[in-house]
Image 1 (tube, rainbow, N blue to C red):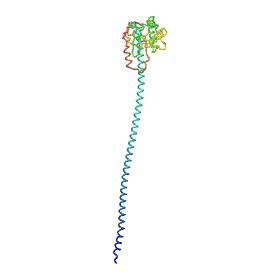
Image 2 (image 1 turned 30 degrees about the vertical axis):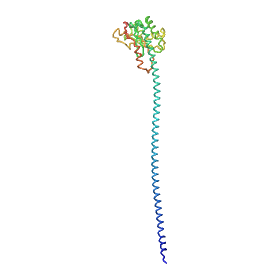
Image 3 (image 1 turned 60 degrees about the vertical axis):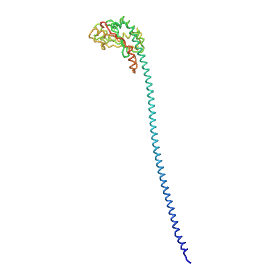
Image 4 (image 1 turned 120 degrees about the horizontal axis):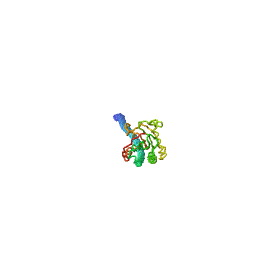
Length: 293
């Protein structure tokens, strides 16, 4: 009896472990392969997630920066709007004030023109013969009266003719309630005569005395309020003509009555010029008669 079958069985038992080992190795390799592949996929997913998160963060930063920039622009626009609204309100107020000022000035100049026309009417006889010169400039009215129309030669007392002239002048001035009225006396450069020097040592005293007497007459007889009257004496210091001729000296011997309206400092030049142009008086030449103080 042979033992061949037993040897065959032993040979079968010999390769079985190798087969199991191979299967285990293959299985382990497959697991490792799958694990490695899963790890790579996980890393790829993680990288994608990180990239997506970084992109989202960048977009968020960009969006925040854009929001802040937009907020700054909105704040600047609101500030500019507020500034423009304030400037608009200021311009509106200034326009209203300017309009009111222009209206006040035009009303003032209209009153001034009315006063000028009234004076021209009341003094037309003296204006015609050159005893009085009436002028207007820069919102002022000036009445120049030669000395002989008001005073006798070398005297500061107002003559009968002078009282009649000042009565008419005072009737106009008494109705002017918003102007200062300065009355100033002027002489030529000849000193008072020896006969007069006891009363009037110099031309200062003579010019002041004549101005004061005119002011007193306008107040007491003409009804002009004293608070609006000013008396001044300039002597020979403000001539209007050369003293080289009798005609020039006669022009310098005069009484000036100056009406000075209290116009606002802020004036509309165009309105003032227009109003003054509308009321420009005719030019009247002064033709004083020869005479002495």
